[in-house]
Amino acid sequence: MCRFARNSYQKCVSYHISDIKSVIQNFVEKMKEQLLEGKSVNIEGLGVFMLTARSKGAELAKDINAKSVDSVRIFFQANKELRVTKTATRADEKLDLISLDEYLKKISVTVSPEDPEKPDEGEGGGDEGGGSGEAPDPAA
Image (cartoon, rainbow, N blue to C red; front, side):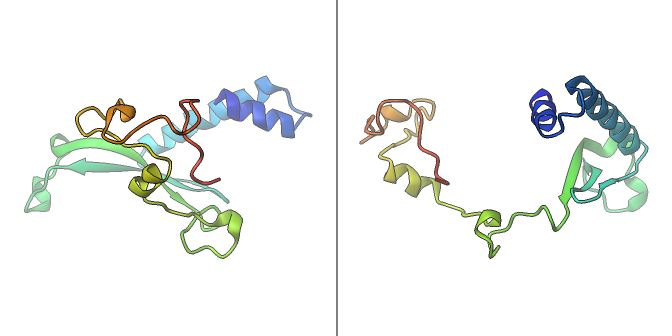
């Protein structure tokens, strides 16, 4: 949240960073309050936040109760203005999906199935990427 507040501060220099942080913190508290009351929170231009529950299945509705709920999560549905799609026509809004396996082959990295934490110990792996230990951005 601090990075968001700092970035917002740079664009809105007429507000102090502590004011921006305070507004965001108050917003989060009110949003949580509304969600816990079973309401959805619609932020115009952004999307809708709501709670969803995962529960054990039951054949009859009367058999569902609070004990059958396994978990509760916050679900976010983006407004159409914010959505990024694979089929967008504008280059800055298009999402290009790539195959991770093909990408790793392209940069000559092999992940060992025995120890995925040590990619260079797999067969045919090596450090041919420049030695920085950091993979290039696939979107670049």
